[in-house]
Length: 199
Image (cartoon, rainbow, N blue to C red; front, side, top):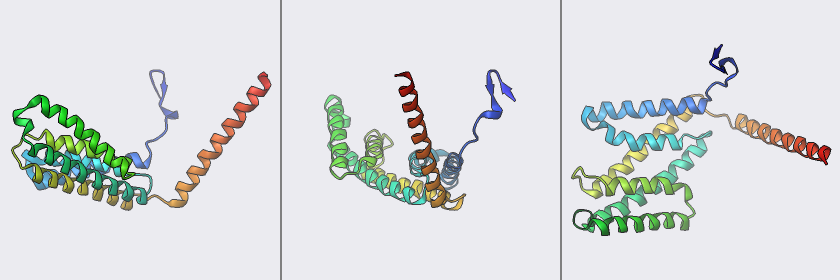
């Protein structure tokens, strides 16, 4: 079967990680829609969906490891954001506010690097901006706390889906890694042979 110049019969099928990521996102959106109602469900579903997408790894152990990094990043970003809002710069000194926001982003990233938690950097910056730019009138401390809860929901969904839906087999993962390494080695040997022939 062809679609223009593309032969659909030769295209690879989506992998299980792709399918499980979609399942996790659908579950998160459904959970927030049912628990928070039609008006507010998107607010929590945004962060929880992002966390679920990031945390759903090729193994359950890696999912837990990513989840721990996301909780740390969420907590750090939330604390920095709440402190930033508490200064009052957002409502009274716009220029100072945006300069201070940039400085805080540098500080958050620097702290993550000092703690050797580079994987916490993206989510900490995202949460920081969500708290700082929140205009709903909710207390920044409460908003930071809610972000931590949303992060934990995303992690829980990612873990549950990864554990229950076609759970990754460590032997199968190891086999795929060895096969990929062997293929890369073979490609390197072929490249070296071609270079020797050309010389």
